[in-house]
Length: 282
Image 1 (spheres, rainbow, N blue to C red):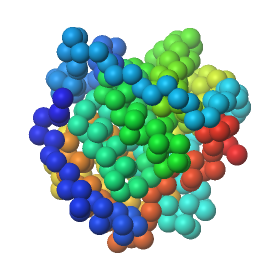
Image 2: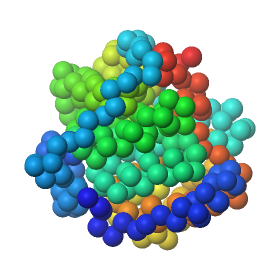
Image 3: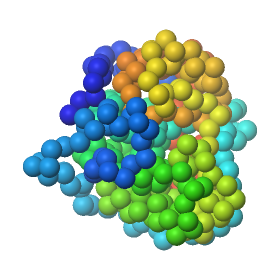
């Protein structure tokens, strides 16, 4: 099931440039109207069973630890000094786009943080065999972006926590890891109530951003690159999406921008000292 117009990756170019330093069902997912037609094309016919994720868990998953909430939108001074960039990829209703990002991580070694929605599990679950070894190695991290991508500020208290807990359960079952303490509010919508509720179940870090690819909608390659150039700076938390094919066509150019600026990609754990073994700040 490929995205319409998703182009193939030039693997040799990717390897060379990064060597420089660089829905289960769609039902219930909160997609915008223009996204629905694209997303629907990625649904596996009912006659085909959804692949199951590997069952082995690399380490015990820690219980949730409640704590004070903090909103994080940029790297700490240490990340700026080290010229680090955290590339975070949300959603993922484009099957070939999600696969392209997984292949990118596997073949180049670039460090990425994915924030998938469990309602797109039919797309993300088959990638578990590729991503799990990278997660165990600390190269890839998984954050919680809620299960259905609904605006959290409009939900009841019960539904706010349910969205995070359902997605956390799916992440644990699929990737054998916890997303705690990181969660990214859909659309960036959050308030003191949602933050307190999330923190009460261990999601103490509200993940925002100070850089973007601008790819929550369909862009031309030149448009995406121009936006990325504005924001690729030391300490940036970059927001991207695995929803439209444009980004998959410019991986080498994005890597070149980073290389030219002496930047290198890290996970949120690496940038902020959080840990999957504890599910909280070290």
